Length: 515
Image (cartoon, rainbow, N blue to C red):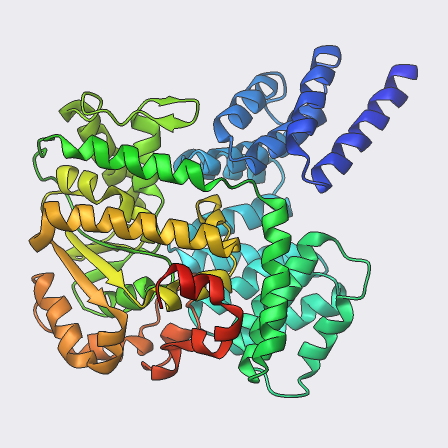
């Protein structure tokens, strides 16, 4: 009995550590407890979720597989193994675990939502929708299924249905600010807007930092819509400061990382033989027009838009040896064997899309880091490098939030400028090496001369002309980036030099970028 009470108290402490995002402390405590209570599945589950939160999927999987051997029909373990597998990039394995969990417990809402979210990443959006609806039918008061269904409608461009569900969520829990933040992206605010006022009231409530961050960014967008730029900036600034306080980002790490990439590719590395799908890689700084470019390309009858894929990054991290979380990028390691392994990993992963079109578009902006590698493993691929005014790029990065840790440089002006300059320097390096193999798609030129620039793009990709490329906003494919609302509209010039509305607050950017 004494042990039982002790364990119960310790689990309560671990749950509170998870809520406080003290994941390292939780893991240390949990592993100590496992030595004393090795038969307790709940300990394995909580520790695995903490590993996932730290993007340590492999550690999470190893831990859960230990207890699964003892409890092969524990559906919670199977569901969490699915989550861990997603973090490891093993989507087939994840789907298998989710289905095993659902076979044991068909009404396990967490597994239904997780499986639906997985289908979304595979562009199987109609299948995803059915899982979300099934979960809601089981319990229409739970928020995760509703949030995922709203996200489905939002990404599909059905903003009215998305708004309806987000408002339903806020009726159930007014402090569920994920819904507020999502609503802010898909509606245009006017003075006196009731949602704007309700968000301001919530700032005075006793809500955590995470909720505060979302509200500040949402209010920044709302006040930007109605032209109150001073207020808008204060909210954006407050949101960024809250994020900066939370994350651990050191710009020196990126500086060293970019330098090692250049050094690795200064030496000659042989191409490997072309194989498989023709691929168009759309790269550049985030918010430089990459989503718009993919939307144009995927409107073509012979092009499949796969979205923002992590497969190249995952393949590089899996196949190149890592020491202390640092990739081994010396030229000896970039040999034909490792290059083929990365290529084969990538080609295996894109099979999930069952694409029958001639070309596939991979729009992961930060793949600009790996242009040299792309040229070696996919020598027949097309590289589209999206460019835009540095001030517009940096300001747009600052006023948006991103889920990836790769984007942790966006919450501070000095970090932003440093990263932009690293990107610019690396792109100059790639341009010198592969000049004619990189197409520079300039955002401002595209806005000014849509047809001319679009035809240049299509010609570079060696595609026949398709009039649908000019009507990209009619493209019904799912879009999940921060640009999901903009690409549903025709091109407009008001997105150019929007930073000037905030110029008196952007002296650091202006001075460091030489404006």
